[in-house]
Amino acid sequence: MIVRTTAEITGTDRDVAAESWRSKRIVLGGDGVGFSFHETTIEPGTVHEFHYQHHVEAVWLVEGEGTLYDLDNDTTYPLGPGTMYLLNGHERHRVESRTRMRMLCVFNPPVTGKEVHDENGVYPLVAAAE
Image 1 (cartoon, one colour):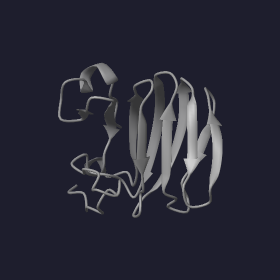
Image 2 (cartoon, rainbow, N blue to C red):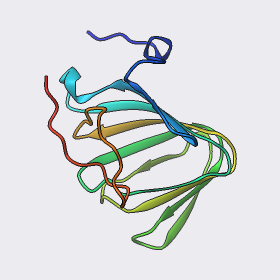
Image 3 (cartoon, rainbow, N blue to C red):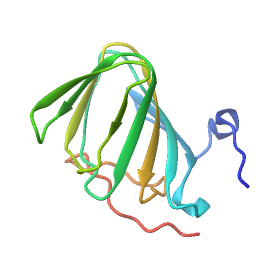
Image 4 (tube, rainbow, N blue to C red):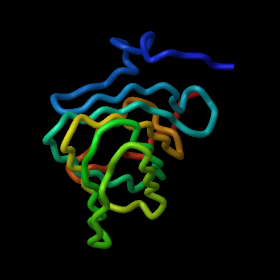
């Protein structure tokens, strides 16, 4: 059994941040459960483009408002508390935040926590050491 709090993750290598976002990586590939689980916050008025070419991601918006643009299918979706989106087709997408957004995210295969988005917003596929 694994029990963790976001408080104990804060300030560790599982707490990754840049100027406009923060990701607390609660469960990672090294935990050996087949998925990773993150709490991600995006600051208001920011734009982020992503393409998880090697991962399926499910996102549940807990707080905040914004817009999701499916860049592959030219479709726009409003985002608000209680909205879930699933990138089951590895869609290139853009998230624009109107307010501070807090999301809970699941990745399969799991990420290791060491990935960095490349110039196309893609995470490389990295095998987790268990």
